[in-house]
Image (tube, rainbow, N blue to C red):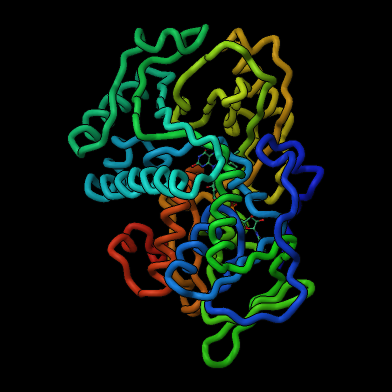
Amino acid sequence: MTKKPSGKSERQRVYWLHDAVQQYPQLEEKLTCDVIIVGGGITGTSAAYWMRKAGANVVILEEELLASGASGRNGGFLLTGTVEHYARAVALIGREKSRRLWDFTNKNIQLMKAFIGDTKIDCNLDPCGSLHAAITPEEARELQESAALMLADGFKVEYREAADLAEISDSKIYQGGLFTTEDAGCHPARLVAGIGEQAHAAGAKIFENTPVTELVYNDFDSVTVKTPKGQVSGFLVLLSTNAYSQLIDDFFQDKILPVRGHALVTSPIPKKLWNEVIYANFGYEYFRQLPDGRVLMGGMRESVPGGDAQHFNELPDERVTTKLIDYLHENFHTTRGCSIDYEWAGLMGFSRDGIPMLGSIPGKHNIFAAGGYTGHGMGFGFSMGRLAAQVMLDGENADMDLFSLRRLVK
Ligand SMILES: Cc1cc2nc3c(=O)[nH]c(=O)nc-3n(C[C@H](O)[C@H](O)[C@H](O)COP(=O)(O)OP(=O)(O)OC[C@H]3O[C@@H](n4cnc5c(N)ncnc54)[C@H](O)[C@@H]3O)c2cc1C
């Protein structure tokens, strides 16, 4: 098992994590439990919460701090759908499967809104809606077609022509846009910390700074998970390690690919620039204004050769950061006087078909994995954690076929 490179000084570059501190102890004992969850991002904390609610004894083992992986390094966009526009997804995987995937994420956002409201997690949840903005006439046509299909399938969306988007950018590059009213923005690290707190309050044991170094299969179908100073034995394991999964089990080598994504945050701007979170050019560029007036901009990984390199380097590529700054300055003149206060990178886990996966590893029926969100894990993760709990503790679930891990086994 290879150690993933990261650390405190590197976390301080991340807007959402710059003041993150350890909340839970390191594992320094031998424990037993029902389910061992490896990885404390949105998937792992959610799974722990729902498993505890179902009565299972659960332990989370997190290599660094909760949310120090992609869950604390993203844009905080809670979007309906997958990485594709709806019309393209329909062409690739069919109408019914697309409708069910969009419905899953739409209900996920509703579930999160209700959960955050009930538990009062302080994560700046903003039910602002989203805008998918086209930068070419072809993408605008795809979004218009998507809007028609989504409306027919019962989703609350609206298509607007380029003229209606003119106020969004100074250079007026957007050719049309699809508004989804139920989407939202949030502070992702505080959200995950809050889900972790709820899981902990419900009885889950959480250990930070506890990297898993080895999985040992015992008799009677139990597994022992080893860490530098302790170990946990249990009947089931959930790998909620997304992009890092292949460092734990080779099975994921060609199934969840680490893809580096970049983001930055400016100094505050007193003027309100946009209401929605904005996802442009098929999601290759995305931006939003945060409650303190700062602008978050991410993406552009395709703009320089190797910018999205598939390795485990979480340090930003300065060439991509420069492209992000250029994009802001060119399209939003008010950002020109701003300083860039934070800039970071993180690892997304891409699946081969852009659809997340959940299931047990063939030949290792008590080791499950959930991930492969292809840049959309905040839109899936909370419900994927709940689905993992249902599938692992109760057996099958009606949504399982959407995410079957077996589809990726040759
Ligand atoms: C720059 C960027 C922007 C993004 N923007 C968005 C967005 O706006 N909206 C959206 O929906 N998605 C976005 N994503 C994707 C989203 O962040 C991820 O899909 C999601 O966070 C995945 O959550 P997770 O819990 O499955 O994995 P992660 O959050 O990556 O958690 C995995 C955890 O496993 C831990 N771990 C790894 N190996 C070990 C080990 N051996 N032992 C113990 N622990 C281990 C890691 O430390 C990590 O904390 C973005 C990603 C990036 C990088």
